[in-house]
Image 1 (cartoon, rainbow, N blue to C red):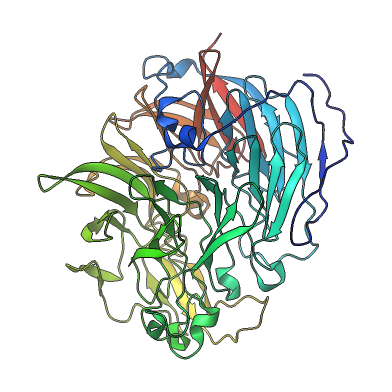
Image 2 (image 1 turned 45 degrees about the vertical axis):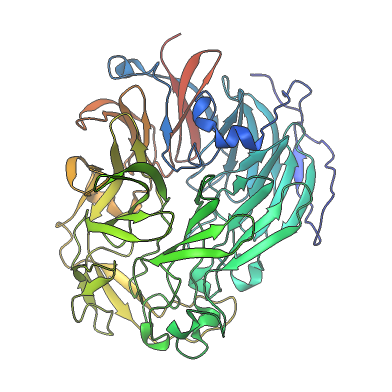
Length: 548
């Protein structure tokens, strides 16, 4: 691999006082790549590429490549490794466009590689303030692409557009004030000619929202708040002025359906996290999925999974969109394994609740009623003395991506049977300070938990098989799931393994120690007819292939 020369001057154009980061290593051999909206809509037709965070708009995280399959997966070898220059565990999912790979590292660095060799083309390092108001690490999970541009959010709340070939900054806008607690830690979603991004900051009492920006100019097209303002329907579900500091951030990438023209985005917990006394009511639309008209930015419908949450059970999982028969009729469905330990099926056109069932251990609800509302077990809210509740603060699942395989027709998710002792306390909102209202401690029964990958029937949520993981580091599990046409399920573990399972049975076909925790979603791509699988693990990106 030849050494990349650094020191390229950066062209800066933009809006709202862009910050001056540095791009380096522009390469005259970097290929021109052009990604149209039509290509994004039809991403299934080109499985050699991975064009969005979840691979496709529908959130399946499925690859139609089948060169690597059940019969030969045990021959997988490391093809190349890219070593990151960060002290944080990397959570990026690569984007691959015609042999060009885009990856990110903490805190807000963008790197472009040759996907077949790992050779760098260019790198951009975004300057961040010395003091950042972040609850959960300086994470960056990826980028979006459109035309000849690549888009990245930053931990200090900015959205930046780059020339994908040279690394030149084309525009740089502020999405949220970092001083108030706003951040961007996940990949944007590009839809039509817009770049859509959510924001983090729920632990700082921000009021969450979803933004869309013009991909050409960086001008904001619309903003949809996740908490209704005074006079808007739903504001009455917040006591007093608690809605102003109510959280409900939108910190993970959503999904999109071109036919309904709706973008689907999950929202986080209400604030303060564990003391609900100061925010009486259901606290709409925290812990919910928002369906937003992508052209107008108007809320079409919303469904709340956990009303008046006092356990920090963000509904920021990836919405999985499938077209299947429901009770004998074709329906556009949304599948959702929620952090609160229930698996849901919704009608994604209308938001109608159809079904829910437990997919992990929980002790807070007797079940879900006919309207999709939980039937609460009394005395499960946090107290000053502490109350043990399942699932834990980390949840029955978290932000790590599930997968749906059209080949098997199954839904796959990480699941945890784990409890937590929940405490509440009084906190006062101060801009830029943590606003938690309590804390959690390990369960009184530390040996009574399970971490696993579970295969579910998508219509009933019934468990068909599970693959147990090492539970000694349960709260560290953040690996996503990839399924492929080769009959494989790829994922990873906190104890440093990347592995491939049989997607029909859960049998272990292949595994390798990658030397550190896997906190990212795997993906697959092909260059010149050769299939690769990539995963971020600890502080490196590993790319595997069959022997050439």
